[in-house]
Image (cartoon, rainbow, N blue to C red; front, side, top):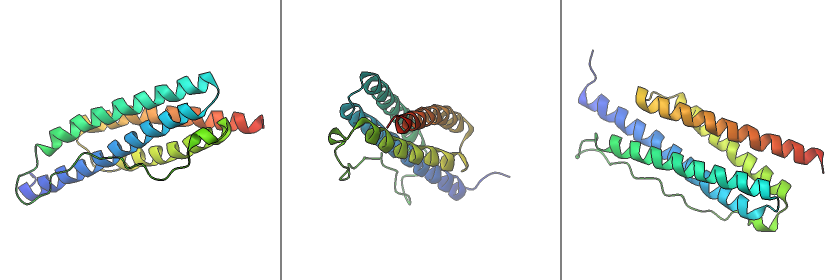
Length: 159
């Protein structure tokens, strides 16, 4: 049984919405890691956070390309085309005034959000080609999360 045009449209809308959430999460992660890199004194942490910031920028760009592809499938009438997520920087405390442990802890909380966002996306129906992209990114997000959590625990043991 084939999907009706309305069902296909709703599916594309849902996919676009999921992509927007993931793009926003990656933009937030890119900005958070960039800020964290500027707020730590340890050179190794700075390099690690800069690398994760770059990774998130690449993930967001890859998902934005997918969003453009899915937006092209939306009918021109009757649906609002999805817009690329624009991250709004809220009034976060400046990490430059914090110690390395506080910066690590802040990033660990951000990574918790990223993992949950990806888990939610993976629990929803996604086209197979998009699912493979999201799964691949999720594995890398989870690795970063686990690394930051390990750093947080190690820092807590040494303070």
